[in-house]
Image 1 (cartoon, rainbow, N blue to C red):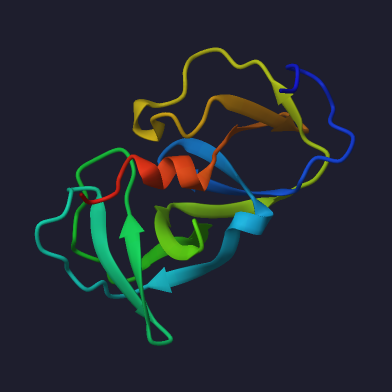
Image 2: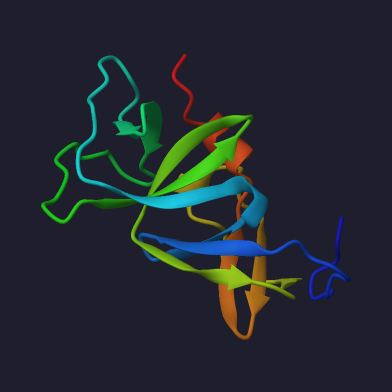
Length: 148
């Protein structure tokens, strides 16, 4: 485990995304792409956080919304969805904005706990030129929202 404030010798780059008012950082190797979802296929009998399925290039990608009861009405301009690699599969996370790729970040202390909607997926904050993000493990994030 790394110490807070320690600059890692070769930290893996992360991509940042804004979800609600929080910035999340996800390792680049776990990010496939960002897509614009203009329509989602609805799924019956799933948890409220599941928005639906994104049909893209013949593949069905489940899309998750964090932090509130999902609304299934896609706005006219569509939703931004980060397509992530989770245990060998593509899954979507609805985002409010895509940020940038951070290199040379460091783990740091931050006042306050991660938002409850992140569950156990983010326990570390990172900083790069005063930009604080929650470092998120997509596998842990999705684990809390799997449909039984």
